[in-house]
Length: 333
Ligand SMILES: Nc1ncnc2c1ncn2[C@@H]1O[C@H](COP(=O)(O)OP(=O)(O)OP(=O)(O)O)[C@@H](O)[C@H]1O
Ligand SMILES: [Mg+2]
Image 1 (tube, rainbow, N blue to C red):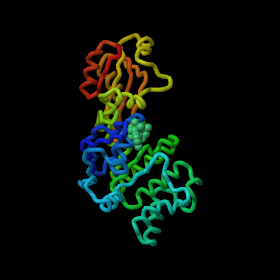
Image 2: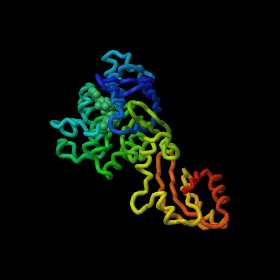
Image 3: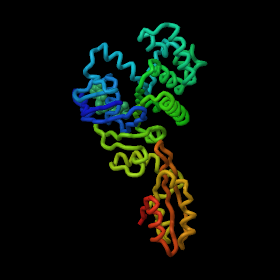
Image 4: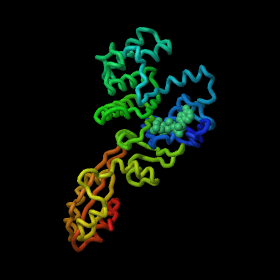
């Protein structure tokens, strides 16, 4: 659906994007995560040629966007919607007129515009605000209008650049759910940029980690949790897996629970639901003390993280049993 081949963007003094090769499949929600300055916005803005690459190739639906005439490009761009962190609504136009705007530019007939805008405002849940101005809306409502406007021309791709960064956690969830619904209902491919793992985890199928203009790691979201390869990926995963609150770090756990062995268990999918601990106690001569843990749902399955203290006689057999079930067991020594 979207294919970047060795795409580079150099500004006068900065190498913002430094050779990115990437394929995003049709119908996928693809996340790009990275710290500030990594080049995420530059990269996503090249997908609709808001920024022109310095070099490299760019295909959307197998069409080489860099080979198009200005007019052809204008038509292709209608198939790519975009939403932004600060919504970018036209402040002197009503909600209705903001959503109607791209349709007017596309010279759609007035009565069709009316129906389409009404339908879109319904879809995103802001019908009652149709005659209000952006300044009269909450952040969440503004982003809903932004989404409606981006969908006006029935795009196949929706580009999202930090679209929840200005919103509170609850509103963020609602907007992400709306994006998920749009993806599932209309099969629209979504590219979503964020510096928060919580956002990526919520709706993305796959994710790329970006640093210094390059993709340094890529894969299923669940794989990032179970085996992050780079330090940066590990730090992003930590944003979620860190057990905040009344929890102890490895060293402190060891001091507090000196008996037996302490292990960190990591597992995915159905293993999370399995009554793993109770079966362990029944099968082996051991005791299991659950110390702390977390289960993190992602689009590709759940990721479980559990710290337990094992005491008794069959410790090594019990650990072998866990490993046989696909659970990653790490001793804390
Ligand atoms: N128009 C521009 N002219 C010159 N340099 C730019 C321009 N746009 C971005 N840059 C530089 O390119 C680099 C990448 O910027 P970019 O905005 O793509 O990062 P980002 O990952 O989106 O960061 P953030 O999370 O803060 O939004 C930065 O060093 C930035 O200063
Ligand atoms: Mg940015």
